[in-house]
Image (tube, rainbow, N blue to C red; front, side, top):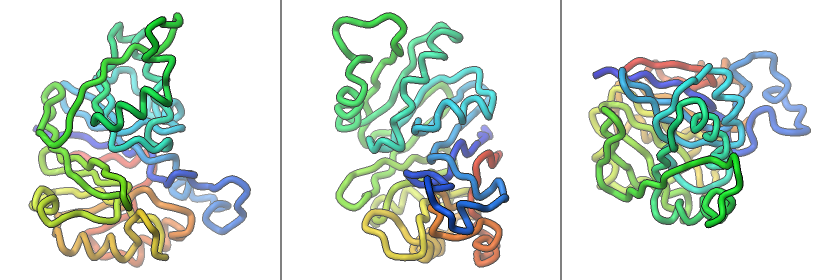
Length: 255
């Protein structure tokens, strides 16, 4: 079964361009240097899910003309990954369905705090209708997609990456234990965060991401969650080996 991946966003928490920044990346005319907050769409013949719904979720859904969505899956609770949850109410109305939202127990707690009105006992008319679905480390299925969680660390915060078939998506991390790396072997495509060149407390740097790709040896790798500090898309891509590329908003892969 083949799957199609669409990068809804490939930027870091502040997006690119950064507000009030006049650097060469933020003022670039290249559309590949315009990065909304990180999120992907995964589609099979029968199932369509998104991983994360950040502040740009509405814009991303409209850009890609997404008319149906079967579930939202969350990596972790930071605002640049969950802030767009309210937008699922469009699918409640159009698709006449409650939206399954897959999240760990900890992330569910954050959703209930951030979106208290969705989960209140007294429902205000027109609020999103969601069903929280718990997962931790076990493999789970959504439609015909079989999803394996990958445990990674975002400094001290546990974050989930995911493997679907021979594709894996790992964002917001700077440490992966050897036991979890085993789940990332024999991949056709690995998507990995690569924030910038300078050391960062909670994200892989450009070189750390390259080194990890060399360790895991996927057939192809794409870097995401990119900040303006990394450099111009076209110039940075020239530095990468042939099996690694920078992702960009709207990039589509069939695996």
